[in-house]
Image (cartoon, rainbow, N blue to C red; front, side):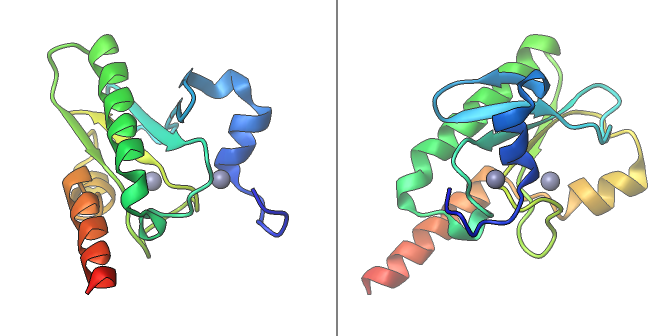
Amino acid sequence: MNKQQPFCEFCDIFQNKKNQIIFQNDFVFAIEDIDLASSQRHILVCPIKHIENSSYLTKNDLQLLDEIHKVCEQILQKSHPGKEYKYGFHIPPHISIDHLHYHGIVLPIRDQFFGLVKFGRLLYPMSYIKENILQQNAKKEE
Ligand SMILES: [Zn+2]
Ligand SMILES: [Zn+2]
């Protein structure tokens, strides 16, 4: 992390509020999202390294993205087996915290309005993010 970086809520949790962390390995950590979009469970999985948002991702991060999804899925399947889940990233400008985080939600989403605004159109699936990375790379190589 460089010194000019402004305060980051998620880096702060990782460094100073370990009690909020429900899972961590060498690459990612997970926390509960207090925003109960789901009546069941809503978690966030973040890379440990500070990545501001998905537009900063490169081809080198594809493995990290797979890890993020895997961890998210495992946590939800463990606590809520056999349910349907929704996963995704916000992309700029619809971001509340400037540290990349992957939402994992046990369906159904509790509030229809909230679901539409925050987790319907504005939550982009992993496949969309990966495609964007590959397209960016293709452009650079032209
Ligand atoms: Zn951060
Ligand atoms: Zn978010």
